[in-house]
Image 1 (cartoon, rainbow, N blue to C red):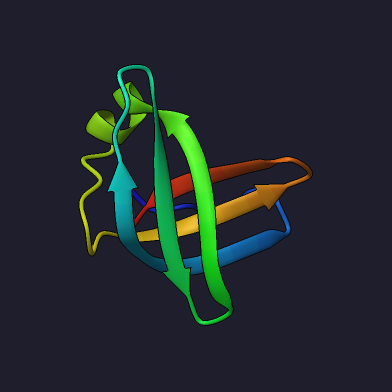
Image 2 (image 1 turned 120 degrees about the vertical axis):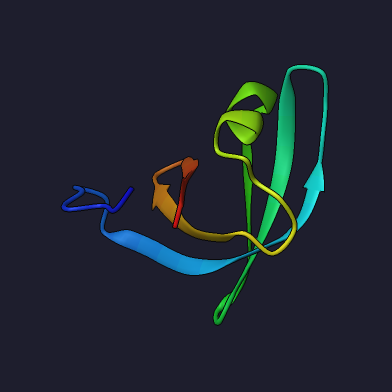
Length: 71
């Protein structure tokens, strides 16, 4: 999968540093050149994206939401 275009301007490429899994939601810490970005996403999304420590991702920051796209 590659991202062709997206309307979110604040994008931070990085690697997953830590995953704190919960039953419903999980906390993902992404290490970027500008620091750690934390995203809270559903645990189902963690599994669907096959996120693991070291996975390359893009943190998409919009207002109060941080989304992740796996590279």
